[in-house]
Length: 223
Image (cartoon, rainbow, N blue to C red; front, side, top):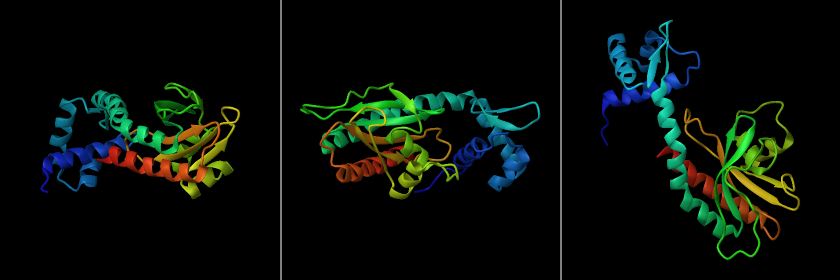
């Protein structure tokens, strides 16, 4: 499939700028893109006209408000697309399924699905929040981050296994299983998918199910 070279360069420029917290000069951006500085100036000017980037007083280029607007629309679209995956996960495990996202040092539930006909399920609700280092969802997110010598054993184990399991950390008697969802660099979203149940959860089967769901959600994020 052929691509539009100018559009490709513009998108690559946005990616490079998004990974430069202090901003980047046109000269350095041109080097990264391996293009002439004059062409780079035109790309930046086009992005600037759509408020996707701004030039600071020091001449360095940073993301603009337009990028934030697009980002704010991303989560609702992701939630809509992820709904079917989550419902299948709930039915497959007969447990409450959820997607959680990191926000600062907290983990917040952004999507929930419950199995149909289940007599007993955990009352997990959108908006529920808890410390990022407690509960399967938060630990699964931390496990996707670069290794740190200060990582607790639970995070190290989740990184090794590809999923996390916690028992009674957030609710007495509840067992949670979660896997991190890998998002593209610069997406600004750290999330995990998992299930939680009070009793009768086959942890090994649930681990396979949440890993499968995480892989499918990752595809949704990258397509």
